[in-house]
Length: 173
Image 1 (tube, one colour):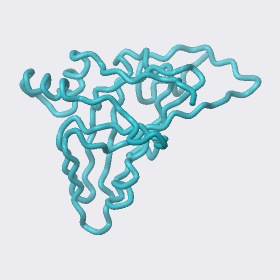
Image 2: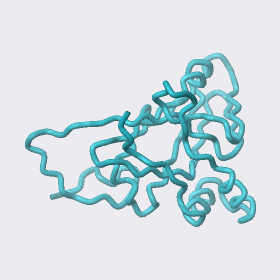
Image 3: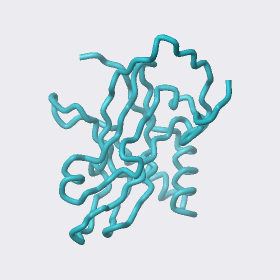
């Protein structure tokens, strides 16, 4: 099995900024407690392809509700690899829990971004059966799978990323 990546926490300062930007003002000691309890993603079994991401705090979504989750996680990976993020299979099956961008794509150069490569997730309870999704702090809610990719023979991309969502779209050469 190839070993191509390493998960890390973002800095406490980056997490605090992201948490406050997402949920509004919050006591610094509460944010630090949440940060300290963050678990790095891990596989549940030797045969699992996906690395489970764990909720940093309790999440409760009624049907149709959406939540933005700062995970506190970043990932370094080899340049020819990408991390693809999906909802945990059971949550998708039972509640139609969806990632708002359907598949989260974490590029290898996102690690060097101005936000330390902080991975966020925006999830929606798309239940058509009136089910409320309850995810406890420390429970898996998303999974990431590393995939190797190729480029075209005539590819000449040489720009450098400095940002997150949409930061590479429309850049001129």
